Length: 178
Image (tube, rainbow, N blue to C red):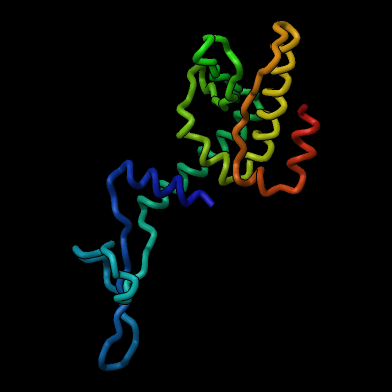
C-alpha cells in the first residue's frame, strides 16, 4: 500500500534492495540460499533465481511510511490540514478570476511540503475523507468571496485524486459541496 513512499525514501538514501539468491545443488537438488552478492539488485536477478528480500533497512522504511500514515490521520483529526489558494489572474486585465485549492499540513507550526504527505494520504485511502473536506472548504470559501466581491466569472479549481474519481458518489459529493 505504501510502496511508492518506500521506493522514494529508498532513493533518498541511495540504496538498492538486498537479495536472496536461490540455487539448486547438483547432488541432492535441494535449494540453497546464499547471501546477497556484489551483483545483487541488478536487472535480471529475478530471472536468474534471485528473489527480492526485505532488509533491515526496508523494514525501517516501511515503519517510517506507517508513521507518516498515522501522523497524517491524527493531523487531519486535530485540524492541522489547511486549504490554501493559489490565485489565477487574467493577464489582460490583471484581475483575479479564480483560484486553485491546495492542501497543506501545518505540523508543529510549520507547513510541511506537500510531497511529504500527499502520496501517503492518497495510498492509505485517507484521501477520500480529506478530499471531501477540501472540496467543501473550497466551495464555502468561493461563496464567501463571491458574496463579498460579486463577479461575473470566478472559478475555484479543486484537484481530485484517482480514488475520488473512481467513487460512484463523487457527483453527489460535489453537488453537496456546492
